[in-house]
Image (cartoon, rainbow, N blue to C red; front, side, top):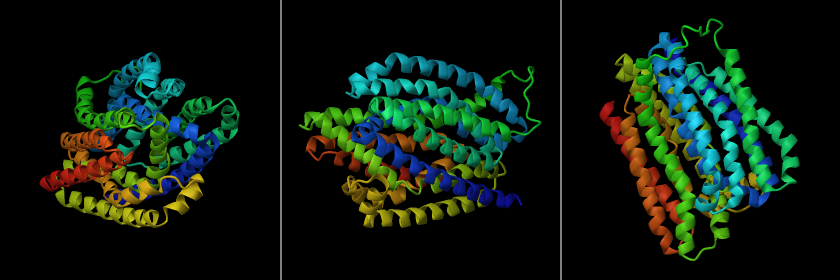
Length: 429
């Protein structure tokens, strides 16, 4: 029966992710068509900042909680209690930083003062994202995927209803209000997600006053897992944050206008890349289910099961990626017209599609390394890939090839990270 847990968990996550992704696609269609090109450009400009702030605030805790709960079932309450002080302190620090620095980031770094209020809106959402992340990590560690699936679906339904009700009102006031409102309203969907998780908690799961004391040894264990994980994510998110800043600065030196740069960056991020990562719901489901499965096998020194699950995961992700990216490569215009009612981004899709088949296996490989306790090696691979990507963007932008400097940098990043991860995995199993 235990052998089937991984397969059941993966299937539940895939079905849930498919529903979530389908609803997300509807949300994206409604949102992008409603806010227009100016709103799309503004939204794509703040997304790297959004991703960086969330990565810092989460501190890699969901993965750490999942790993520890999977290995040590009996200490799950102590693990959750021990991470709460970390989350509270981080949220206070990040909310203060966002409020004080939003204008500087928007005007000086992103070269768009309109981004000030959308960035500031992130401060309201952070605490709710943190709480839902802790609960999600707990259920992942227990290999109970139904709460995560149900919460995601209900959250997306709530988000869609909120957008349909409030976005038409906000868009009348302008793109800045629409994007800021979209960010703020996501707090409501996160609250709904938290409520769903609380409903699924075992009835016996109660924390008394005496238990509400962080255990320093447990906190240290969590941090030992968190720090290498968050280091890799931070490097990636910092690079993602710097991406539009570097592109804008270097391409402007090459003679491109700010309007052209932000317009093409919006096309790349909002139209092209989302189509290339269509299989990500399957990849994410497999990667999520892989962490507790490999963690347990690693604790039991069962290398045979580790190899088996890893082989299954990589085979599925490669096949799914190959099929979807081939279809998107052949008829990108149909997808772009259907989803976004545009034909912009075809050129970027055609160049990137062959390489995004490899991109899909980054998730399972990174999850496997984390579950094996080799997060430092995953961090090393991410860092090398990101550095080369950033250097490529900065140097190739001077060749007057527009946003293709970013495209080439992304391809190099995928090839390098996948190659290094495979090398480390082979050494371990």
